[in-house]
Amino acid sequence: MPAVTHEEWLRRAKSLHLSGAHHIDGADEPGGGAAFAAVSPRDGQVLAQVADGGAAEVDAAVAAARRAFDTGPWPRLAPAERGRVLLRIADLLQERRAELALTVSLEMGKPITDAHDIELRAAVNTFRWYGQLADKLTDESPHTAPDALALVTREPAGVVGAVVPWNFPLTLAGWKVAPALAAGCTVVLKPSENSPLSALTLARVATEAGLPPGVLNVVNGEGPVAGRALGLHPDVDVLAFTGSTAVGRHFLHYAADSNLKRVWLELGGKSPNIVLPDAPDLDRAAATAAWGIFFNQGEMCTAPSRLLVHSSVADRVTEAVVRRARELRIGDPLDPATEMGALVGESHLGRVLGHIETGREEGARLRTGGERILGETGGTYLEPTVFDGVAPTMRLAREEIFGPVLSVLAFDDLDEAVRLANATEYGLAAGLWTSDLSTAHRVSRALKAGTVWVNCYEEGDLTVPFGGMKQSGNGRDKSAHALEKYTELKTTWIQL
Image: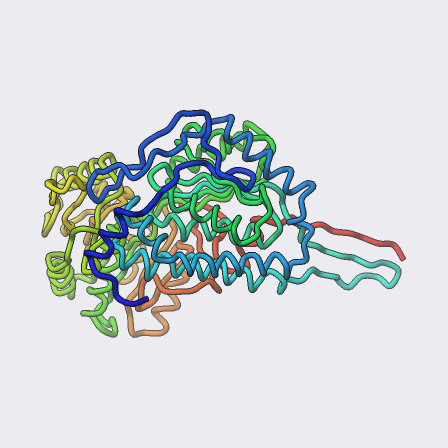
């Protein structure tokens, strides 16, 4: 896309029409009259009134999804035909990429450059990848005795409830929706109340692309109401959730209290990023550490929020991170030059500031940041923040903050680094910087994390699975493995 100026993005924002109606059974539904305001963290302005769904709207969406699964064409289409629809969705998302990037930037504060170049690229690629994969899957015919034929087939699981957060509203929706659709399931998507508008546009794009009515439905609403109704619904076969560990526990309870639906959870993280003295490039390690914690305002479950640095290089690496934090350009998400935008809202900003104050009280040393800024804009902006002198027992080192706050911990030997890295209830991701191949393999195996990046961070593509260990969840998004969540294995034994 040709470069778009700040002024042009501002003009487009003023003319952008955003509808907050639910999307159920292939059409927009205004709901029962209740609504909530979608507020932009950029400036505190209301973007749209969004239909506020509850049990009635969830019932309608699940009923539509059930009809589409039980009697509609989608699960019965040849996989190649389903794939063609997913590819058409990808094409339409690409055509509307600028509009969708603008919507994401306005509703959750992400810099427009990141929304366009990273978020929308990921969403388009996800639907395209699963569209191409749809007819590449095979069933099994194990070798048996000559008088029998055994078949192992993968069949679509049914109605999928998907509940996704606000930090990557289209990427994470795509990671759930695209493989579920490729498998032949139907979906009810409940986006975060902080970012419903991009998900609603996705549903309308899918309908325009030829997805049959009821196959993808979007219901807005608060988690304790609409999310709870979806989790408890007896006609939902699978529930896929990305969000906090605390809310993930609720979904497990909902499943136990209803129909024992399968629940797949991608939860929080407190990811360690280990820098050894023999890192191939200490400056790059420091720059990547800073990028990783400040990208997306630190609102990432995989954010490398614990920087574990060998004591011999701790000062050098920490100083480089502090310098980068002070250089970051923070401001209007619609300015293409902005490097860090606004946190998602007032309540979340208050929560992050509370963690910063706790860090001060516990005795960690604040090296930079820690204050709210740009208050005159009406937006929710925070300085990039770095603490060092952090002890492993401090809340800074144990609790997920979900903001641009880095804790630096020093260690003296490799065994200590691994102990510190694993001293958390989470196990989502980890980073390691070393030039020694043996060390890279041994430490990667020792780290209790679903993804380990060596001499990089946040790298990868759709061919590899994503998910966590311990209280970071279960199951995997991305890759062909994601289809395991949305299919059932059936054995057919034929006596010949």
